[in-house]
Length: 367
Image (cartoon, rainbow, N blue to C red; front, side, top):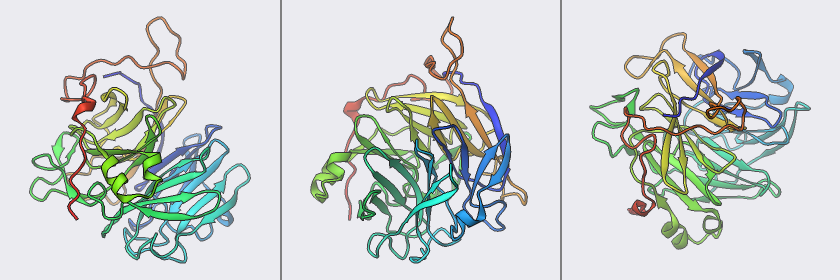
């Protein structure tokens, strides 16, 4: 394990999920409103460890955001299904909000036509590439069919991708006993059926998405070709891994960051080598949810105390943490310092354990 040190940034009420950091370093958190009662507004800023709601006039009409991303130009992107539930989109209220946090104004609210956003759609997560002018959103809520949505940020045109594809469809973990959370099965007698959750760009012009302890990717040029046969053949199913993830992001080198539910921490994947590296683990973390990378720093959210063996508490809390990388020997601490990878004996296939690229395979497409 790399031994990254964890700094606590804030302790928040309720069950926030997404975290985003702007180019200037401002930190924002999203809190889905489907857990009642709502403990905080759906999008807030963390300032000196305290919650600062956005101007109500700016967010008027924003119902419930789960995923959250920020661009280098201080634009915050918040997907909203328009309802306070995990399914059943409100087509008139749903959309992707683009908020200029520097001026506290909504620069645009993108909407999705019928056939792109379905009656069962839930906008779970997203990834944004402002340079290419495109965003990809995950539609995966309480009801199927699931899929991805591609949005052109310039024209507002959108289309549905991977509709009901096996890589996004809800399924139980292939691991006996199901998903591991903090080293123990989440629901061994009735393994959870999980669809796609996190999504990010990474590697060499690739899109990654995960489903519990499975990871998939595809070349963006193929995905944007809109040829279903080419797309299906090009999807890469990465080798099975010994941990489930929720949130994903990428760092400045195209490496993929993944929350690690089994080891209560954060992992990093180098797509070029197939190596996973456990950056940090902490038994106090019960469910690492969102993750964001800026300048080699990670921030992730987790419910505290552990909730996977008990009912949710009446007054849950969530911790936002920052993970600055350690310096190399003889090097002063700096955001650009790279971690030194070492084996972590507590997790097979983690740390420096290599997952050979040759072991990748395409998932069977059982329609």
